[in-house]
Amino acid sequence: MSGLPDRMTAVEIAGFGGPEVLRAVPRPLPVPAAGEVLIRVAAAGMNRGDLLQRQGLYPPPPGASDLPGLEASGVVAALGPGVEGVALGDRVAALLAGGGYAEFCAAPAAQCLPVPDGFDLTTAAALPEALCTVWTNLAERGRLRGGESVLIHGGASGIGSVAIQAARLLGAARVFATAGAPDKLRLCAELGADRAIDHRAEDFVGIVLNATCGRGVDVILDMVGGDYLERNIAALAVEGRLVHISFLAGSRICAELRPVMTKRLTITGSTLRGRDPADKAAIVAGVRETLWPAVADGRLRAVVEHGFALEDAADAHRFMHEGRHRGKILLRTRFGRDLSR
Image (cartoon, rainbow, N blue to C red):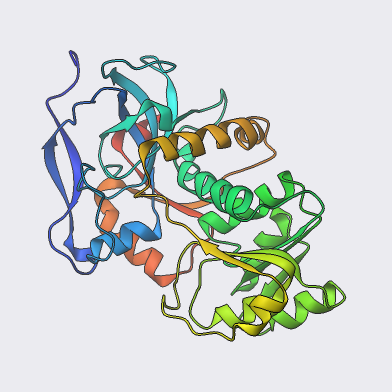
């Protein structure tokens, strides 16, 4: 790795707790293993999983970096043995098991997506985790098909904002989305939701059933959990699919099974970080084939309204805790900030 610095700035978790446990420290550059590339990071996308890791609730899988950061964008700076399909100098956005909160990170070449010409390199950091989560849960587990209807909870979040657009690209006939503030509801509508539902003031079950003449929706993408379970079941159509991707309101649930059986519902869910590298490579390949072309031609956009310097990761975590953001929050390195000038 000639020509590269010996050390980099990285943000580590000094001890489990609040945002104050995040600290910027010097570290050696990671060395890419077989099949991996070293990326000079322009930006890292922030995810709820980063907050959970900081609190000690979402440990990295065995062999992964202890640094937070599940997605990043940048320029390929070095190649590990046996890398194919990626070259030095390529602009990429990568799905990571950890390590994105740094000036350099290692990533499997099979988990890198080529950043299209003309697309802002730092903004690209907002896409890998969201696109992969949406693809595997809406298209694969949720089996969303053309002409069906879908309800997306948290429609103004990083994942929700991508899910609304992806649902349209996958052929959904009706898209409903929940959010909790006027500006977030407007964003859902701008992204393609037929009906943006204020979960603080409106009953999403009643609205969905009324809009579908009592039928319900075919697929629900849920990141809330908790007491949403029975309401989601009520809002689903016969043969409907409920897909859980998080549990902001709690992971322990209780529900009446009768409607699950009489409506022949499927209740499923998944996580992404701990999956086998081959699974992740397959998911990235699916994204590259189906959704990534829409990024290149502008039909699918990343929603990024707030960015912080990498060294200010603690402030970024506090901001995410407040829940006022729309779309993704990015952490930009010095390299990424220089690109934006």
